[in-house]
Image 1 (cartoon, rainbow, N blue to C red):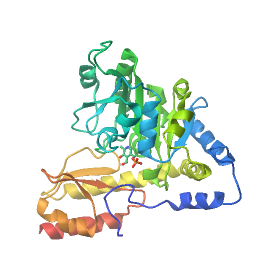
Image 2: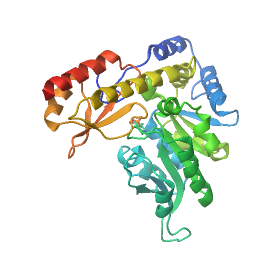
Image 3: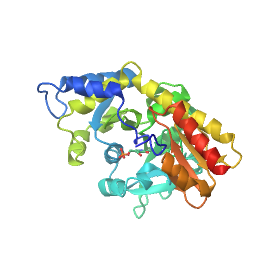
Image 4: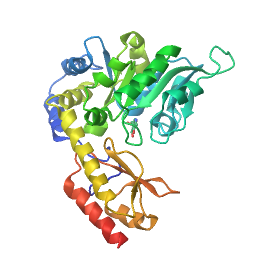
Length: 341
Ligand SMILES: Cc1ncc(COP(=O)(O)O)c(C=O)c1O
């Protein structure tokens, strides 16, 4: 299939990651994480987040989010999140099934949630009849391709701390956010009070694998059981660990995210020159959201596929990836111009 703008997980595996998989594919190694590669990858994470953090590898982002949230909640709790969040929109009812919790959503225009709206959503604390809010969950970068500033995260964290809540971050695109902010991972997570982080690998060049990182290690104490119960304990763990080791080495995570973000910026710049197209969101990371003339969409999708985000307004989502190149953007924009003419 030709290069698409459908999703950053339409792309394949970065060659460095494939090499890493090949390199560890010899002989026997301890299973379920009792292997030297898992120890090495966990050490790498500690270099980024500090010695005290607890790291657990899982298969996918849904698993990371759902199980991370499970470790923070009882089934009478509620999780506050945006109405666009992956946990609400794109994980079926896995969060509800595994945590038993109510998802309390906040309407969002830009993918983010803000302290005032969160405060408004916190109701009937200590009321035995009402779901008890316990976690605030945000996505960084967001499902709309926007990125929270450090101050915005700190402000949400202050609300969480004030009420004695935990703070969870869905970082399936955390590398894109780090590049966008030009900050270290730590500066916009543990330094500003995030307790549990889903650290994404798949969208940034891995074959599969995500990490649940307990930045507040006390809450990790039951997680090994939760991960097994949640069917996310990989027996041949070395094949997830070696990928993370490669991703976190030689700034591979950064190079991949820089490429994806730069291409999204370029794509947006080109689209802005076309009067019939309107960019709808701030292009902070690797996603571009735009309203296209509906008549051109089917033919354009045939050429380089992408998803329509909102049918009614013909708003589309265009995702760039570590393997998006300038030529692909040029051919896409050229085709748009031909179809509009
Ligand atoms: C914001 C966000 N979180 C998490 C995920 C991970 O999902 P999956 O379970 O498909 O790996 C995705 C993937 O689309 C996502 O966009």
